[in-house]
Length: 512
Ligand SMILES: Cc1ncc(C[n+]2csc(CCOP(=O)(O)OP(=O)(O)O)c2C)c(N)n1
Image (tube, rainbow, N blue to C red; front, side, top):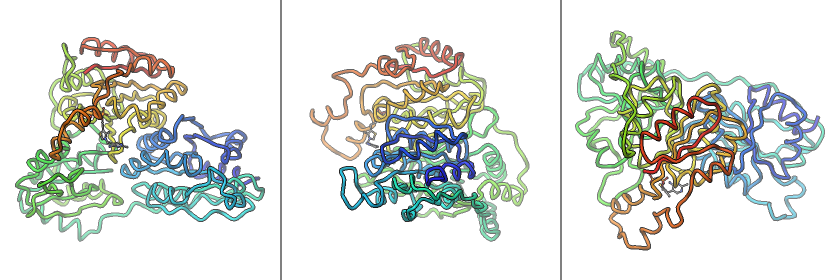
């Protein structure tokens, strides 16, 4: 058995059975091992940023890591933006990065680069040293690292000779450490804070945004008057009928400050304290009022759901039904608007849909209009590095087969990783993409004004995506995805309904 074969067996033994890949010469023995050993679903992606974005989406839905296969330092470099997003989503992932053979590295061949440096930037898990030749790679620490709550990125560098040398050893999976419980004193302290009845807000992130945890948070809210909110960007949130609907801290600084004004206590439940995405001249960076006490109920690695359940019990908060979101809206008519699109989605989306939201500026108001939709999960761009929506949707569809994925996708961001559409076609994934075609970097037009910069012709041209116009129907069809354009909400509704009724990917260019 060679090193590559032992690695594939070890990954499978550890429950990693899906590999998003973009291979090169240094990974050929790993690819050959995947061919010889059954059990691994291999998904080809045509850019490394699609590989890592797809592995992120897979992990968010399957709740376990996928493997990625990436090509030495430059390939890993291409992967970094979506690795960053995955790290912010706290998605587990095991990266296998090929590299020059150990004895070839000193020759400084053209593709030799700082693979270890890049791996270190992909997440907090330090890459293990290259395994000694001959053979015998040892991925279980990587697998365990990835699965340690709340999910981490583990990167294994696989020099070509360690893959092809004989002497591979299959390692049994290591036990994954249990999710740590919140300390009883912390729970008691937070209960005491909530009993005071002062203006308080529970900021729910990570596992606290799942259905059961939201229900317990709602009990606490109903019993104590504490408000509930989520961070601006979240990896996965349970939404729709039957779930407790909560709003997010708004992205614009003034709106965020207004939302949190007057708070005496901010209680963090698996979420970080809210800060502005960027510094703006003359504005604060922290969004909570300066005299607001910030308490940590659960850090992201803690069992936030158990903490909320305990707290609800301790406060004697009875079970309460989720608030009725009102009737399911009817599809909108006329010219496209954000509210109209939200209503149309709520009207038509199937049960248990997965919404992937990289809508950037267009989607800030999607939440209120989709409350009365059937139960669904909502996935967002967590690290602000645009170009993750299409890959994220691709991975989510593979991680949750049988569920329709709906991607709400801003056009500028879509162009970063547009090749993900090809993988959706090849894998026949049930993904409906709505391209929000405003032919602008609209958010940056606002940011130009927000930072007080000068909007001259050259600056404005750098935020304009026209001249030439992108034709999304041609782009999609060129990658095997059926596509149509919609200029009205009626047409959009028609196309959405058609797409939901048939298997496979479909793209709607919504001209907004
Ligand atoms: C990897 C990366 N590169 C560049 C940026 C800067 N950036 C932020 S938003 C944006 C434009 C987004 O345009 P689009 O996706 O069309 O959405 P819209 O603003 O029109 O809603 C850019 C270039 C970023 N956030 N991440």
